[in-house]
Amino acid sequence: MRENKLIRILLMISAVALLLLTLWIAYLRTDHEAAFLEELTFTAEVDGEMVSFKPFLEETDGRYYLILPSCFQGKETELTVHYDKEDSRLFLNGEKLRNGSTVSGIQGEEVFAYQVKGGFGETFCDRELQVLISEKLPSLLLTVEDTSFLEKDLEADKKKYAQTGEILLLDPSGEAVLTDHLEKLRVRGNLTATLDKKPYTFTLSKEASVCGMATARKWNLIANATDGSYMRNKIVLDLADRAVGAEGYEPDGEFVELFMNGEYQGLYLITEAVEIGENRWDIAEDGGFAFEMELDFRKENGKDYITTTGGRLFEVKEASGRKLSAERKQEAEELLNDVESALLADDGISNISGKPLEELIDIPSWAAGWLAEEISGDHDVGIASQFACTKGESSLLYAGPVWDFDGAMGNVNTPMYGIPEALTASIAMSRPEGNANQNIWLAAMYQNPVFRQVVEEIYASSFQKPLEELLDSGISDYGEMISRSAQLDALRWNEKRLSWAFVLPDGLEIPAEGDYTRFDTLSQEISMVKQYLTEKREFLDSIWIEKKEYCIVEVKRRAPFLNEDYNQTLYYWVEKGQPLPAILDEDREDSVFLGCFDDEDGQQYVAGTPVMDDLVLVARWEQKEE
Image (cartoon, rainbow, N blue to C red):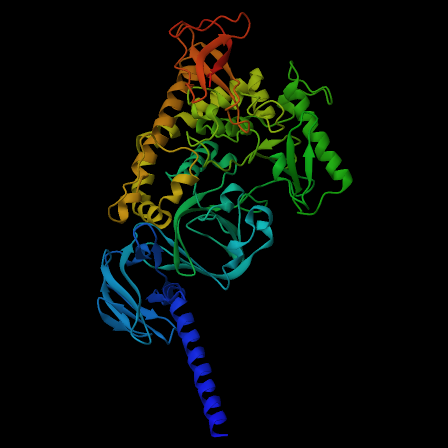
């Protein structure tokens, strides 16, 4: 009996010891550093509002960074530490900070020894924490209950997942200029929705002005994740707004820094949403249509689409927002086909209504929209984000507003649109043969002599001066305004940004080591933008102001190694009597570039030969022998 009792006691002791050992191993294996970081916040009072901020780990240098808004610049700040982990303690510079402790005298750039220790004294984290403060820009602080919606399948279902929350907008001085409830916050965009730095759209509970823009409820946050200059969208929106003036509507946009649940998300452009309504897109309330050119692979269930006889896809809406009846959809389809018939007719007259193009579309608005696309070198010209509408009592189809220019000004993955000395908006076959997404409409417009004359007039009267001012000082002013924020955004997203960009400036490199500024590439990115726009302006001045004569050289590139998803044909506008510029082709690992040959007589074009007429050349390669 005594032996059995002893055995039972030993078994119980062993079981308890095994349980304690298991718990200890599990404790040691738990990622206490990540768990503690999830709980950790720093708070401060700003204009009577308690605001929270969270540090993030920059994995390439292993340091934590706590980024604070511009309103803390030049001040000694006191931060209160909050964390609910009872089994952990935070140490900054060796000083133990309990939940609710304060850190005083913070001015930015401070580097703290950052340690997290467990309840048994063991160290789970031993890193550095640097505090950085932005400058010059307003700060948008969004708070949502659950950020897991960001991890959903955003490519397929992004519009299904939305959050409510709260919004606080602080101006650079720290004044709370907007506080409201967020009725909806969701991820927006297409390709950009799949990147870590996401674009958003949000709806306020009531109409309000944001950053001085006209009052509304719905707003967009453009991440500019693929644009290393952060300003391509801003440039075109401002340029179009100045050119159009009070005669039309173009969305406004202002730079802000975004904090999501206290964590710094980076530099954004907050813009007015392209939506029907007061202070926004003005279309006819009674019987009006709103159209958007769309890519065929981006069609969504529940929306109304029309494909014209010529193959151009449009999404169509009514001012009421209701789904279109069969009769209304037919009416919209007839309107679009009537316009397209005039566009594609040699004499510019529709074979449906018998009307000339100028009696079917508002030519000045389309010319202005055409110029915004052409000047920027947008690679989606005439196939996506091109809006049109009917408005007022007019039966004309109006263009606008302009939208979506991160893939522009040389930041393009389609070779044609990287050439500034070309009228890319006049090219119909903007994608390979067989691809339904072609620039049918805008290309056809430029072939119409009435439209072309208005384009030249509006360029000279409305676009030339604003473009010159942008190049003289405007772009530099943008750069000065966002320089600090761009530096911090680059830190937040580090080398990922290089993989998101369509094109990088020549010679761009990120140093392997250095302080937090090593990711800053803004000056090189701005130089790339300015170079593109400078060359584009010089070309447009020469063709429309100086009236120089140009020949169009079409270079067909057909090779198995070329990406079939993008245009394989390049177009060069060559001043008559001048030689063709160097062809952008080269030898490959498996083939040798032979040159370009006339598509009619097969003769090779010899470099340096003056071009006297329009040419169609074929680029050829020869397979290397194995």
